[in-house]
Image (cartoon, one colour):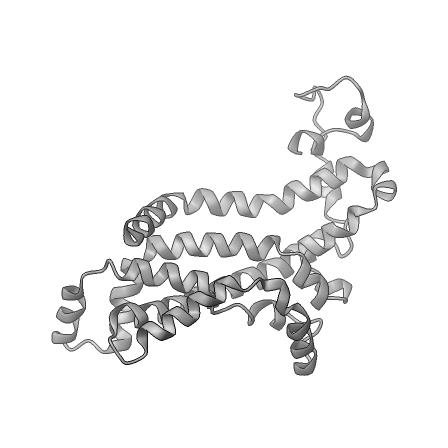
Length: 251
């Protein structure tokens, strides 16, 4: 994909494959920003606002619920946990129609809200956070209480810092899912200027229309992939620790 993005259309269609272009066309990337509808800059901005907001809210909600289920003992704790886990057995597609009707009733069509608010409490993320927080020793929490720390302070100063690996792993997974989501944004967004990058790229499905500009199509897809690559590299260290801890907790 990257190699095609620095070629001309004729070089891409040539039967003689040139893996390393002798004359890379770096100007394809600036041209790609005005090739999409809406412009790639606007589409990337929409995706960034939606993905970052949704991921942060999901981490906040999942860590709060996971902390309560992992460290508080109260009647109905296990029943609530089993009810949350049972949501993972229900295919998401079964809720598309009622979810669409609900978003329309709220008046959220063609806004960021239906892409940010629904899904902030993910059963999968809550399950993983609970499994990780269980591994945090109770003695640390008890010592904080004896020192006069409030329950909210324990969550903010103890639980969240010690859960960074799990937060990084879950955050990266949900960031990728939200960034690459296509079906739900296509249902919610009809305004051209509100389209996320994946919905904008979906407009390139017309092969006949895109054929004269295959090099720009490849450039657009490459630019849309860069944020995911950068985030993965940045969180790689915490990601490995997070999955190691989650695996240990499940055992």
